[in-house]
Length: 368
Ligand code: ADP
Image 1 (cartoon, rainbow, N blue to C red):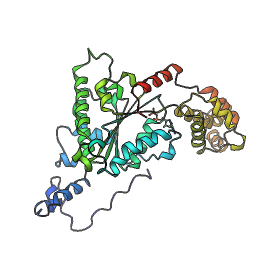
Image 2: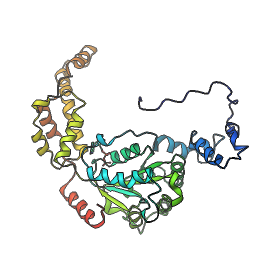
Image 3: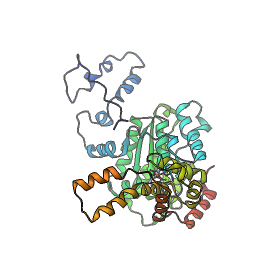
Image 4: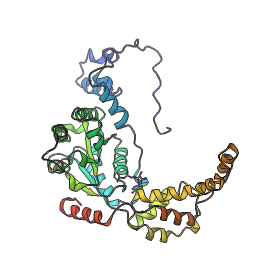
């Protein structure tokens, strides 16, 4: 994609002959390091390579698969989400900036009693922007982003999850400053069935606690790691993990203003009859909808003209002429009628009962 930085141009001349085991060769300052800053410099240089190259200069080793899986599926160099892409949530944005970005930008201030938070939990209904917030914080702080699905940690990597957690934090240190985001954190440290919890999952949880205790230390300034976590089921979190997630931020359903902004964001990418859209109706009709629900309404409305066209053409079958017709006729503006129809197709996904539970948990354990 266009957002990815271009590969730096290859060094043309004077390059030592390629060899998989040429680390000392590539880093000649190591041999005659008299400058006390040389070690620091070499660490910086190390970052030019990958974590894999740093642990396995020969290109192979016992945990190769796990490291490759992390680099491929979990690490995102640039998640590229900005605060402007996220509707509403001004309080959460403020709080995250203060709690996460400032300690990276002015580490000398955040020492002693002002030490940064060990971890930050975002809780609230699904589809309200928790993942987007984590990505935007990673983008703003120019940190490497690790997007970890805690449920797949617990299931997909069963047996190796503990090692994976350790490697994850090592990798995050290597690419620091880093943001590690654990989605569905409740599936790792769940209270449910604690008594008959598997030995293996207990070990993963213990490893996570140990690793979290290791981040944000006073001498860790240059290797800052931020731990963010999200859950739709905060009441299922076990106590030890909850204690590590010291700051707990409620990410609620969007307000009236937020829902207007969501419609603006999601309709801006399609042609629509803005003057005809009854915005106040849309806003009141979507009370209780999440951001994801509203995105779905807009997507549904934007697809309606094509679906209607397909229905008309169904009797004639699919052939190249018909497809050409669809292409030329479906680019019509989204109307208020489409929006009404989409609203009746997409209902809200969060129940009032759950909302009450979030409010209750917020009062008991939340931060403001
Ligand atoms: P969560 O992590 O809270 O379950 P996500 O951040 O993954 O939710 O959001 C899911 C989708 O819903 C996003 O990709 C986006 O399309 C939409 N969305 C949710 N909340 C917002 C928001 N506040 N602003 C913009 N889009 C949102």
